[in-house]
Length: 294
Image 1 (cartoon, one colour):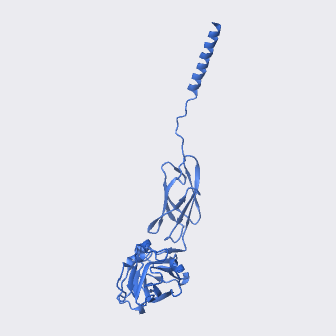
Image 2: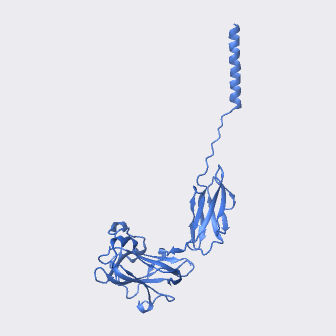
Image 3: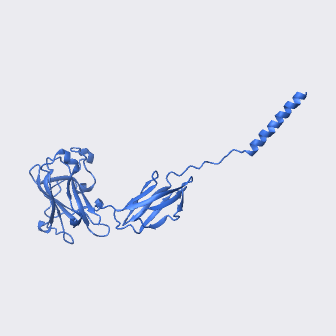
């Protein structure tokens, strides 16, 4: 009987300790906090008439802008679009006017830690002319369309290698003698200071591919006379494919201009001198312009 009493006492004591332990050390029912992997949904800024989107690297913790229209970085209007689960610490405002001639640091809490991103900006030395502003400017001595639409020349369709016509849906523009393009102007109303002209070919140095052809520009104010008299135009350069091979095809035909001698113009003409078929037809699939960012 004595042994039974001792055994029951041990059980009662142990049970009391166990129950007490359970009541004191309750289970942690809180949800663990996972860090916000992308605390910035976007970072944007005014770039002249358009909105520029920064490139954000959450790995390197960098935010980088490249502005195509701004002339300086002293007063840039920046908008921070922050994830709902993140919190800005410095600065605390999401709308800022910043001097981005030097890097700017932004500290944000991602629910796990305070982290810092470095915001920087640059203005490239040259920019592509905006193809959305390109239009035909038909002159009386330009050729009529023979195949395709002249708008194909600025729809972005460029063949990466010879005879790969299905890559661009067999889209090219075929005409006789010459064609004229109005490439528009910059957002501030000024004309582009041309750095480079590029013509991308359709036929690989055969058929109606231009062998020798020229780029002309209208260097006077206002619109060119509709007559198309070449005396009103200035020849800017000549492209010669007489010695070109298929290895050169992807490069296209280019004319480059030094910064201090760049033509400032809005209207340009491409004029055929000779093609590979010995007639007056010219076919291209794309034309592109770049401008010095003066």
